[in-house]
Image (tube, rainbow, N blue to C red; front, side, top):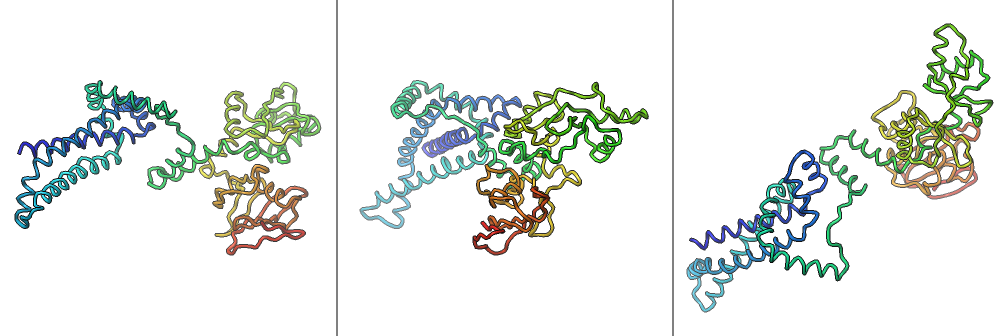
Length: 439
């Protein structure tokens, strides 16, 4: 009876050490840090143990091997008499002793595998942080108690690792791919709502998108000429109610400064004519190169504390204008819909009307297209069409890519205003002619 109790105690200790090993190894540092920040000292202890796990794992292996050896010795002595009696009921030949030993071996092994290994490890894998926080204190005490043996085996292990030039500690570097994988798992499980998932995904895209995907393009910039009369100024404000306007001398490439529309409205409310005075014009302007990513642009806005920036290319030519609102909208996506500014309008289940300046990354998400050819050469859908055709498109020119047809339906001079994107039901053969290219 005492031997059976001893086996039970060994199984319990085996389960404890197995749970400790798996839970501390599988605990996620991100979740542990959150728990530690909330005042959980045990979570902080697990983090410290993960940073230097050598002594802990040495202790675990010493304990598990000792339990396995003791379990085999005690188990054979304890169960063999019982298995001998069972075997004697059906067989009493020369192999009875060997059969009894085999049955006792299988029984004790099965007990240890099931209750000291599989079940505790499954539990530890299901909730690693919670289990690790409960056992870390006891494991530190046992590690300290076995310090001589732990130091001996740990030093030999470290020596082998140095010989083979392998890292001594684990480096937990959380990459973008890791976070995206966690987001996907959260969305699939339902713990992350669709809007939250979309917003987080858009934030990660800030590093992959440049300013031209969010800015107002050069031809759409509304500005005041220094010589504009009251009627012209008033008409521009009524038609384009922006907060700030550029002030130029003759054309857009001769920028004088900027003016807030409320200063002109103040003149009108006083019954005066709208006119541009030197005291109203802000001459210090904020410029950004078009090669900046949206993330870099946000950082620049944070430093400059300006409401908008003029976007210039490498030749110092103005190519667009971007506001902080534009950058915020770029990662808010569909969560904020501004009426009248939709760049993509769905006609039916298989076709969309798309503005030519729509960023390619937005089309990739909408159509679930993984890649566009040489997408580092252009930013917009119109740019994709021009790049693929190798010329300026005309109406009805189209490109087929990845099961979708991209057709120019509205071309104003050299500007592709609008395209029709259609999902094709059949695979189209790649052909080329004078006016159409299918790729």
